[in-house]
Length: 299
Image (cartoon, rainbow, N blue to C red):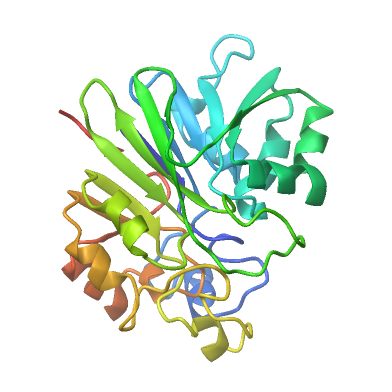
C-alpha cells in the first residue's frame, strides 16, 4: 500500500494568505528553514495505478499536477477512482468543485456529511449540476471494499465543536479511516481531525502499521497567544500536541511503525525545521508531514 501526502497543512495552507504570524513571515522571507504546504489531503493505492483521494482540498489541482501518478493518461482517463471524506469542512470539500470536469465522481461520506454538503454548503448540489455523483454511504464499523484489494472501515470521531451550519445529525460529523491492503494485511489509519483521544478512538489506533494523525496546533491556546483568534485548538475541533492532555505522549506510546502528524496549522512551530518543538516531536519517534511525503507499507 502506498500513501501519498498531497497536502499537509490545515485550512488556509502555509503560509496562510492573510496571516503575518512568526511562522508565515519566516517562510515568506526565507529567514528560517521551512517549506510551504498546501491544505490537507492524501491519496492511497495498492497498485500505484488506481488511487483513492481522502478529502478534496481547495489545492487539489496543484496537488495532482505535483504527483505524476494522479495525472491523466490518454484523453481524460484518470487514475482517481473515488473521493472519501472525513468531514464536511470547507478545506476538505471545496476541491470537489474543482473536479467538476469529471464525467462522474464516486463519493464516500457519512449521511451527516452528505446532509451538510447538500443543504448547508450546497457543494454537492452544485457539483451534481456539472457531473454525475455516486454517493456511497460511509457507515462507521462497516468494512467496505474499494478497488485493487484496498478496503476501509470508518470509525466515529466524537466532537462537540459548534456546528457552523446549524442543527444537524450529531453522529458521523467526523470520522477516521482504517485502511487495509487485503493482499499484504498491512493497515494504516488516517485521522486528520480529532478533538479527543477517547478509549474507542485509541482502540482503532492500537494495532495499525502507519498512523497519520491530527497535529493542527502545538498549544491549545496557540491562536489566542498570537492574538489571531479567540478560540482554542479544541474549540476548533482539534486536540493540541503539547500539554498534559495533548496528543504527543499518547501517540508516542502507540506501536505503529510510522506515526506522522498531518493537518498542521500555519501557527504551529513544528512547521519550522529548527524549532525546538519539532525536535521534541521527532525525539518521540513521530514525523512531521510535508507535501509529497510518500509511505510504502510492504508485507
